[in-house]
Structure formats: C-alpha cells, structure tokens
Length: 450
Image (cartoon, rainbow, N blue to C red; front, side, top):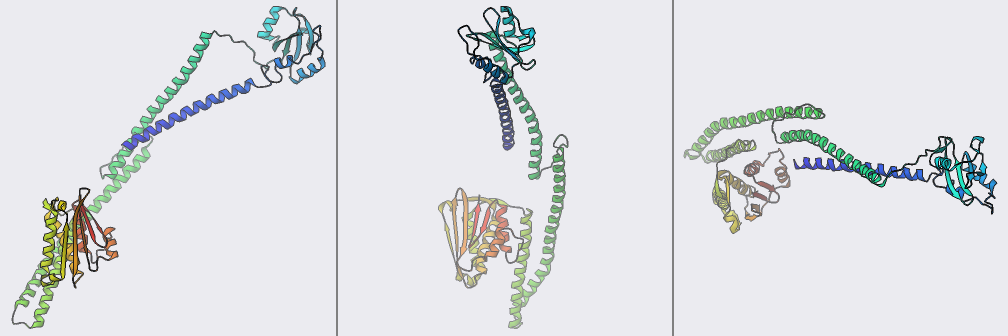
C-alpha cells in the first residue's frame, strides 16, 4: 500500500512539474517573440531604418534646407517607406520624397496631432523632430498596426494583477484536475494491486471487470481461477500420495512383523545350527531397517504436507541434545566405545526454552548423530556446539570422520527431489522447518531456531 501511495505522489509531482515547465516555456516563447518584434528592422520603432535613426542622418544649412537630399532618398527607399516629407513650424512642407498630390499640402497642428497618433490617409506614419523640422515617414497601407493605447497606472497595475492571478489560478486548476484524475487512477490501480496481493497470498480474487483496466482485471481473474484449480489438483494429488504411502506402510507392517517374529524364533531356537541362527539374526536386523525406513518415509511425507500433528510443549534444547546423544550411543552397544561425543553449550543455551514437539526434535538430533555413527564404522569424534546469537538458538553438528559429501549437502540445501541415501537428513530438515527454523548443510550441519 505504501509503495502505491509513493507511485501516486510521484505521478502528481511529475505531472505538476511538467505543467510548470510547460508554462515556463510558454512565457519564454512570448518574451522571445516580443523581443523579436521589438527589434524587427521592418518596424519603425527601432533598428537601422527607424524614424529616429533616419531623422538623425538629415543635414541642414543655415536656412534649415536639406543638404543631402539624394542620400536621404536612397535611405528612405531602403527603408521601404511609401513616402516622406518634412514640415516646418508653420505646417508647410519644406522637403518631400514620393509624396502624392493629395498629400502635398499644408498641415495644421490638429492634422499633425491626428496622423502622428493614428494614420494619414490610411498610411501608417512615424514622426520625429529634427533641427530642420518634423520628419514624417509614411509606410504602405496595412503594413503596420498603429494605435496608441492609454491606460492609467492603477488600471495597468490591475491588469498585471489579473494576469498573475490568471496564471496562478490556471496552475491551481490544472493541479486540482491532476490530483482528482490521479486519485481516480490510484483507486483503480489499488484494486489491481489488491488483487495481485490476494493472488500472491493465496486468497480468493474476483476483480470487477470494468473501466480502463478491465483487460488487466480479466487476466488476473483468469489467472486466479487457473491457480485455484491447479492448487486443488495438487492438494488432491498430495493427499492421495500421503494416503497411499500411509496405506502401503500399514500393509507392509503386518508381513514384516511376521518375518521379524519368525526370525526371532529361529534365532532363539537352540536346536538350529549356527548358520541358521546367523541368517535369522541378519533377517531380523534387515527387517528392523526396513521398518525404520517405512516409518521414515511415512513421517517425511506427513511433514512435507503438514499432515503430521505437532504435540508442542516447552523443552530445553540442551536436554534434548544430551538425550539423543545418549540414545544413539546406547543403540550401538559395545560399538559405542569407538565414538566420543563432545557437547559444548553456552550457559545461555542451557537456559534456552523452545516450544516444540519433544519427540520430533529429539528424533532430528538422533538422526544427525546416528548419521555420523553409521557412516563412520571405524569410529570418530562427534562435536555438538550450542550457543545463542541475536536471540536465536544455534546448534552445530560435525565429526572427525568422512563428513557429508558435497552432492548430498547440495541436495539438502537446494531441496533436490532425489532422496537417495539422505532420507534421515530430509526428515531432520522437515522437522526443523515445521518448527520455524532453518538448516544448512556443509562440512557439518547448522540448525537455527528462532
């Protein structure tokens, strides 16, 4: 949920940033266009051919007559003016260029005031005062927009305030729209993320198939239905497998018990020869191994599919380790003298209490110690170390014998399905996992209980 909220806020921030950047770019464009228009040489406001620069190039004699008339004619033609003339203080034309007859007359003060502000016979004009009089430049009709705009300061300030208010209000309006539409998409995406979360948590999924995300919702619903069916098939298969193993184990026990019984009778019968007694002992010993393998297979299957009920109680791990070690040594009788079990536990570990199934935990420890005894028939030293680290109980098993082969260690650590020769360790790992712990196999075995 937090990640979804982060995505929503990132979306809002990104969109607002894009809106700000867009507005800033627009403002820059307007400013740039305004500067270009202001410095455009074709406009008689500034530049080489503005009325001010052209007027400064006139030369006059003492009587205010133009001395460089031909030069000025060329300049005015280059400026693409329609006509030009100069008025004295009385409104009389003292100099002209391309002036038509209808414009070649005396101009009153009101005429000058009118065309300097507006137009002269439809021609946009510009005026500039010189030592020789008032210079008037006329441009082609419809080539220049020329109107004087007058505005009082208070009104101008109000105009700027309105512009700023308009920009801010537009930005706020866009931001509100972004938030509203973004929240709408947030709710739709939340439905999808909730559906995916339920899917990953193995919960029922039934998303509404509507809106812009209906295709995604439809795919998720189909996937959930397919996974539900697959889960049902797998559960039925696993249940059938466990029941089959349990049934076979039960069916084998009866004839196996008879075999063990008759083998025992043959071994105790004093009338039999030595060879018969020896073979009977072997039959009984191997039958016991078969029975143990069947029990291990049945237990491993139940632990794998969480069908083995855990009878939990509070136990001391240190006590379970010592009892399992003693049981393993006693089980081999006189052969136990070849094995030296070294148990090293910290004081904290000795006081550690675990809520667990006592029989299963002891069975796990017996399997590990028994594994070292079984694979080292000539004897070895077995080391068991227990300590507490980060409030977790660590138990390390190792021996001075052959140790655990790398391929078997890899099979255990990677949950490889091959169970060849490692049923005992498989059971140990499943017991540990059923109690919320972890197990790592290397040169030795490390078990960690939370």
